Structures are given as structure tokens and as C-alpha cells.
Length: 277
Length: 295
Image (cartoon, rainbow over all chains, first blue to last red; front, side, top):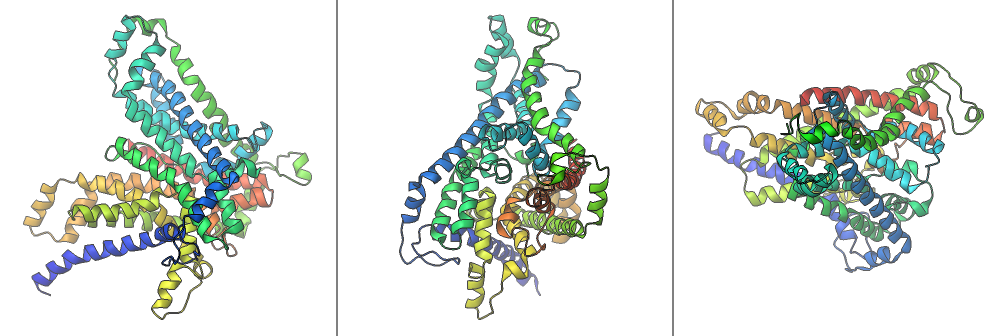
């Protein structure tokens, strides 16, 4: 093999490998997109004979599905708002005061961000039974809030550290209380940070299946994730078109959240916090 | 550090204000996060069950759940399955594939990078139940993969029955690789190009540049990413549950699935809790490594 051939191989090989990887990633996704507009969708990817929006219309028209989406939105939004408010409150003293146990506290928080919540679900279920919170949407939101607060506090504290304290002091001199200074001065300067935490909390909860699956029982309280799973079990083998349409609709908020997060995310951001499993 | 000084009037006046700020968060985390973890330790020593005699009377049974766990062949199978799943999809799959994609994409045409990157990211952004569905239909008996294979004149394969573990590993790779790709893209961008150029001038081969310069330079990213991806994969439930339900038989029953079956199908909550403790301990060890790598 001479140098020229070698150069040629090193030029084309990476492209070929990447194209092959991209195709294998694309095929499963393409199916769900194509099947959702195909009147006679099947399990395998095929060119639709009759293009239709009927699948989407059927899914959207069902009041059960509407409720599932609404519940999902309420749960995810409620969680995001609560995590941001509680997280901001907690981040304030952690960022502004010199507390004695700050370092161990922050390390505990970091430690908690990385624990798999799958592992605590059995005792949480037991706890919910004894607190009479089982099959209660508000209970699920509370648990979600608790499980994403460590991440929220960690991120918001880091964002708050970058807001200079002089501005608050000036506000205090003018007679503002700590709360007013926080709401009018600190929070507005942290909008990107707040949005990042809200978006991550929202999409984490929107995509989560295990937590509501364990903590909810009545089908009329199911959020979209559970409804989709139920749909999968009931009609999955029969009606691929509708199933695909439901999946696409359910994935839209996640995609929107990801696109929004791109506006706030800085490089290498992923390593600053943990993930949830 | 903030510029607030010790003699600032507000600081003096509100010495304990910080408590009010922290209290709501601490209370809610204590009740719904830390307390359940402590309960895990407690319940794992009891005969807690949802039905039957032991449902009425909670008894301490010492280490019985643990002796049972270590004798139970099903536990051994689940641990083994979990290790295969972790190694296949987290270590080899997401980590190596993510690195490979990031490395190959370097210095490529911008549009090309964008298209490939977006496709890989799409799998990551997709919620896990939808991912399960997409991959289920891809590997299904009448699915896309078999359609491709038969068009080449090869016989159909019942992927979900013949190689179920491989299908869930590939599904998790599909669902998670983009995270590693993003981390490694950022890490590779930080490798100073002068060092690489100098090595090229000195006659280093591509392989030498990779193993002697790039990999040592991004060592910390590799460690941290490895911990995060492993922790993430350890907790995977919905993806496997929706695709194979842990089957056929016990061939894809990982620890989370086994825990779920024991606690909610067989109603053995105490036993299920002992298994979740095992899961938790693996998680705690990995998290400690993760925190060390962050410092």
C-alpha cells in the first residue's frame, strides 16, 4: 500500500463509518415518523401508500389522551417550578453566606445527584402507602421534586456564584429586604441558569416512566408516558399508525425542551451535574 | 466567593436567615429521598410483604433476605445480566462508540458533522418508552431489520427471542450514545492542536497520537463520563421493561427488573428491598468514585 492509497483510505474510511452509524441510528427513528402518517402502517419501515393525518387526529381527539397529556404537563411543569423556587431559596445562603458545613453539604448534594432513583422506588412505594399518598398526582410531583432538587440546588448555586454581590448590597442600602433583593436583582440576572434547571427538570420528568408506573394506579391519573405504555400493550400489535402518532406527539415536548436548552447550555456543561436513572 | 463582608449589616441582623432558606429543600429531600434510603436498610431485614400472613405482622428476620439473595440462582442470573448489560451498552457501547463518533467527526465538513450529530442526538432526546417502541419494531419479527435482511436473500431472525440481550444493549446504545459523544466532543476540542501537530512533525503515527497524546489528555473526561454513563445504565428500567419485559425467560432480567418482579409481582417487598439495596450499594460506590473524579 503506497502513501497515496493510504491517504485515500484515511480520507474515506471515517466518512463511511460515520455514514453507516448515522443510518443505523436513523432507521428506527424513521419508522416512527413514517408510520405515524401511514394509514396502513406495519411493523417494518415502508413507503406509505396513503399519506394521512388521520392517526394524529384520532389520537388528539380522544379525551383520555388529552387528559393524559394534560396530567403529564401539569406534573412536569409543577415539578420544574417547585424545583426552581426551592432550589433558588436553598442556593442563596449556600452561595452568599459562609456556612460552617457548606462543603460537606454540597458534597452530599453532589452525591445525591448521581444515585439511581430506580433503587429507592420500592421503599418509596411503601412510604407512599403509609402516608396515604399512593395513587396521588400531587404525591408523585413531591417525590419528583425531592429527587431532582439535589441537581437543581447544585446547578443554581453554581449559577448564583457568578452573580456579583455588590448589586444586592446596593439594593439593601436602598432599603430592600433580602427577599426583594433576591427577586428583583439576583433572579433576573440568573435567567439562563433558571431556564437550564427548569428545562432539565421538565424533560426528566416528562420522559420518566418508572416513577409514575410505581406510584400511580388509576388509569385516569396516568400521565402521557404511562398512557403510551398502556396503548402499546393494548393496541400495539394492531394499530401501528396510531401508536406511532402517539409516540411522536409524546416526544415533541422533549425535542422542544432540548432545542430550548441549546440556547442556554455552555460547552462541557454535562459534567457539572449528575444524571438520573 | 461573594463580596459580602462579615460586617455587612444584613449579615449580622439575619444570622439564621439561611436556615429558613434551606429548610423547605432539606425537609422535602429528607422525607422523600433520604428517608426512603434509610427505609431500604430497615425493610431489607424484615419479612415485609403485600399479601399473606407477613403482610399483617412485620417481623425482623435478620439476614434471611440476604442469605436468600445469595443462594437464589435467579439473583445470580440478574447480576450477571446486569453486568453484561452495563459492559455491553455503557462501557463498550455508549462510551467507545461515543468517543469514536466524536473522534471521527473532528475536522470534518461542518454540514456533515451537523447531520450525523443531529441523527445521533435524536436517539438521546427521544423519551425511553418511545425509544423502546422504535427499537422493538426495528427488531420485531416483521420489523425493519428483517425486511432489510430478507431483501438480501438471507433468512429472517427472531431477534427479540434469539438474542434478546443484544437487542436491549443496542437499544440502550441508541438511546444514550449522544451524551458521551457530546462530552467527548467538548473534551477533544480542548486538546491543543499544537501538541498533535508537533507529534506529526516528529513522525508519530495516528495510533500513537491517539494513545499517547489524546487519551491521556482527556483522561478525566473519560473517568467522569464512565461513572455517569454506568450509573445511568444501572437504573435503566422502562427501556428493558417495555421491549422484552425481562424475558424471554430470565434472559434480560437485570437487577431493576428483578427487583420490580419480586416486590410488585410476587409481593415480596422485603426481599425486593434487599435487592434494591444491592443496586443502591453499587450506585453508592460508583457515585463516590464519581465525586472523587470531580475534585
